[in-house]
Image (tube, rainbow, N blue to C red; front, side):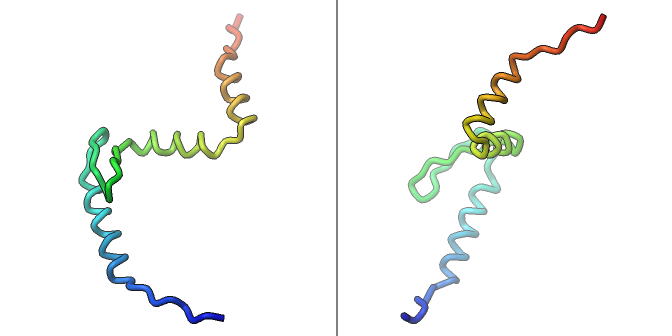
Length: 76
């Protein structure tokens, strides 16, 4: 067994705080480059919709798409 690697947690925490400061100041639609990667701010509602869509299986997505075509019957 090898000894655990030494980790400089102070630099990791400092980097995390730097990224938090950048992101917290962004408005929806704004883009910033963080560590060489362009990042665009989106609304919380859009973020939740994206994460739900990624979590859905292919069968769930198909059922959801098909359900969107079903219209309720007009009441008599």
